[in-house]
Image (cartoon, rainbow, N blue to C red; front, side):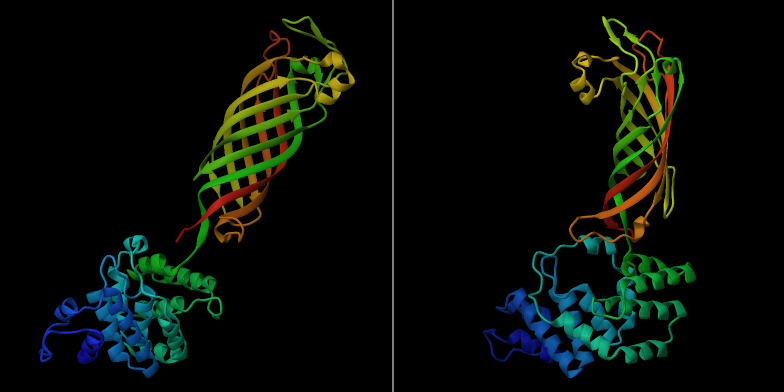
Length: 405
């Protein structure tokens, strides 16, 4: 095999002496060669393709190891990790696979971005094709080895993971289910960490998420304000929130419809809000919250904020009665506390990215409860009152999708 490696190094190369000794190390011949490193990699990969066609496993492994460990460097990638692992399976080099997965730093491998990668060829496809053809023989060979049961099961699982593709009868969901079973059965095995980091591929919601909700319900008003305003038309609510992990902040908007029970003399102004006119109260509150409980299809999120409350006539009413223009009870400030209980349509960790959106989409139907004391504070205390709102809302979530393990 050594002569074959030297042969492909010598192709297209001129040497100053014809009679050099075959005992010269390969590394020195590379340095003396006029071939660039990229050319060496290309020639080596062509030699691997030839060995795949002839079934020469021994020489293929020698070429692969030479390319991976002697030719490749920080700038040049000679063989992709998947190609290296597939060839190890084909050549029966199972201990090399175990050494690779046990001692390879997966994080650094993920971050590794070589400047020069191999030219596009059919090596990966041919390796995968060869593994499919010899699949049963490889499984039998693994069974014949004196591995422990967890190692044996790991190798079979890893082989199947390498063969996952769109046209394969092995799906990533099947692999994930088998990986979960492996990690549960062999929880004390060092291979469990390897399975989690290199075999499973489960997607879930990332750290950031945005949601919008729209709903409505019934307000329950207590206090002096009920002597002046009749709240019997319900309320509508809208919110937009941004989540980071379990924390979230956003803007909550509520509108409560009401009618004047009696004439309301507005403090500080020579104006009267006459009886039977609509008195809509709007509440705009920046809020912050925390998800205290989250399950596959259930979320509980309390929140608190400061509500800015204002009562002004509807534009339609002003159009019908221009005398209402400029009428207002002023802006009141009051605390707002509440809680959302949302029933999710889908589990976040089972949602795949949408094809036309860089992330995932989910929906929920939820119960929303809010409480705010003294919603009108601008009338010298005569309209003090508290509001409790209970309703339903529909929420849409837009979130980043990331690999959770």
